[in-house]
Image 1 (cartoon, rainbow, N blue to C red):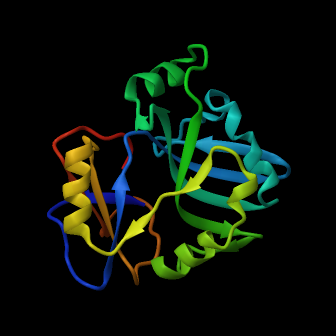
Image 2: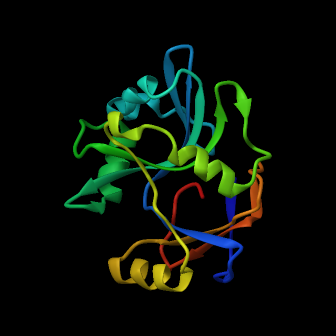
Length: 184
């Protein structure tokens, strides 16, 4: 699902996440292998070999997230661009997970955002290096101020009751901080 650019929605029906400066991917684990695919349908699996540990997480899962390259704890767009070009590895990639779309063959697209998030939070990510949950927040205004202060691209607002739909959707709103963002 791709977010629609807009103003920050406010209310108890919304949760908020950081808009990471990285490469959005769907991570599919099936038949013992991993495939990382961008919203533009480019297979970027070879660019991020350190994420191969996802195959040990679950035998059948599709996850939605953003791959970021962190340098001194901050997203490094230049390191990400170099990795996507096939340059020698620099910083390690981190997959910031934000959604789950399939688990053990069960499609979760029609489940509400809150239910999908709860399922995602039950995964044992501690044994999967380089894979973490993107935190969720209840105060979008405070999160936006923090992302501006830290020089991050913006905030994603997600309706708690929304199913996951292909393409652009108003149930996800991207509130930018004036910086371009990949594949959201």
